[in-house]
Length: 91
Image (cartoon, helix red, strand yellow):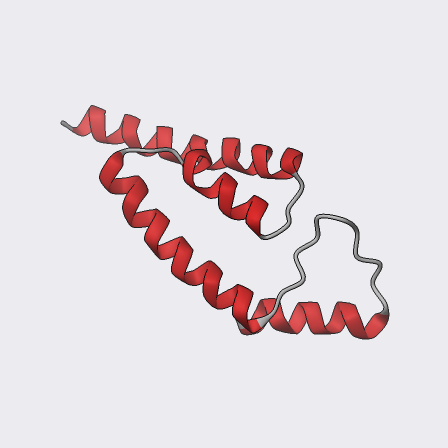
């Protein structure tokens, strides 16, 4: 949390040109992200849903562009599928 706020503060201080879809990190958004991350992690493990199903709407709510949100969801699905494969092999 401190790291993201620090990086964002430095970017604002040096006049970094934020583009559409960049997340403007505030304390409220960081707390919301931590709560939603914990909740969605528990839900995705209990229900067997991939990261894209749960995290895409959250990323869109934070103002991330749909193409970036979709790509991030597909990246998260790799980890979910890999974990499920390992668990299948173990059983």
